[in-house]
Structures are given as structure tokens and as C-alpha cells.
Length: 260
Image 1 (tube, rainbow, N blue to C red):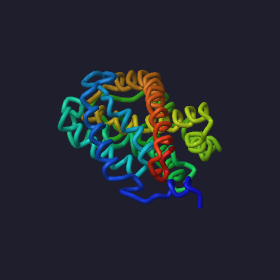
Image 2 (image 1 turned 90 degrees about the vertical axis):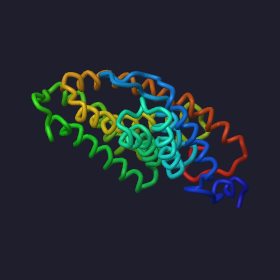
Image 3 (image 1 turned 45 degrees about the vertical axis):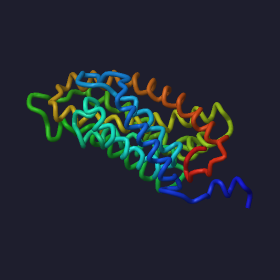
Image 4 (image 1 turned 60 degrees about the vertical axis):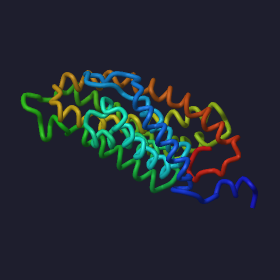
């Protein structure tokens, strides 16, 4: 068996990632919750820099390690930067953990179980996007119109289509792990973009419900994030690839399902 294969299969920690690696990454991620990068559309707070590194976690720590690091970082972030986590423990899930969960799914769609879970996640997101909170349970005096419903489609319909094509089923994870630099950037960007787009509903809709957002404000938020999420994912990819390349050259044992 080649040295490369031995390195790739080296067992350690959780999901192949060492406890120390997970702990350090989670602590860094939590500290980055102190750094605002963009205000919420609709006001009320900022998106923290930790969201970017939460999305990167599954790429370098594998899905299990990345999600555990996100949980750790979310709890740390809640304590060190409560202004970025106005919903407390709920924001640990929404802002701190879910980006890692959805990116972990989208970067591993070549695995049949992850592919099926990705499809189910996108379908559930689409159904909930059309229903919650303005159709069910409903907000007093707020009735969604056709334009609002149309504005929700961009966040899930394209990705549901993509997942049923070779691009979503195999090319994205293959490109993200390949040696072609251009394809690597494209694969990572698409996996992160798909994950963040699906994440958006679960992160945004609870705020709309809890703070009684009018439909017009939710519609404006949808329009705003149609251009902000791509920018965020470009930044995430630009940060992730150099880290991945450095890890590939580091000689460290490879983590299963990480992209290095």
C-alpha cells in the first residue's frame, strides 16, 4: 500500500480529525464571531466572520470534524460575542452549526447517502420556504404575494436541479478534491454556495417569525441575499483553497472526506 493511501486512511480523533485540530479550529472560529463582516438585510445585527470559517470546516476537517468544530465554535461565539448571537442557543444552531452541516452534505454528494440527504434537505427547505412563517403559522396582517414566493425559488430550485445532474452528483466533489486548480476553485465555490443558499432559509426565517418581519421586508432580504451570498461564497473559496493547498503540502495524515 502506498504512503499516500496510508496517510489518507490514518485513523484518529473524530471522523479522522484529531481532537486537538478540532478544538483549535473551533476556538478560532468562536473568536471570529467578534468580527462583523456584513449587516443583516432588515437590520438588527451583523453576519460574523465565523460564518465563513464554519463553512470551511468540513472541507479541512471532514464532515464529522467540521460539524463538531462548528458546535464548539458556536458555543464559544455565543459567549464572546453575544451581539452576534441575539437568539442565544438558537443562534448557536442557526449561525454556528448549520453552515457546516449543509456544506458537509454538498461537498460529499459522491457518497450516495450524502447525496440523498442533500436532495431531501433542499426539498424540505423549498417546502418550508413557501410555507413558513407567512402561510403557516402566519403573521398578523401579513399575506405573501406572488413576488414573495418567486423570490424564494432562487435559493433552492436551481440546486435541486443541479443535484440530479452529474455536476451535483459527482463533478463538484471530484473537482474540489482534484489537482486542477481552476476546477478546484469551481468545485469548492459551488459546494459552499449550494450549502449557504440552503442554509439561508433556516437562518433567516426564524428571525422573520420571532421579530414579526413584514412580508415586504422579507422580500427585500431575499433580493439582497441573491447578490450577497455569491460574494460571501467567493470570499470563502478564496480563503479555503490556500488553506487546503497548505495542508496538502504539510505532510499531516489526511482526514477522510476532507478535500486535501
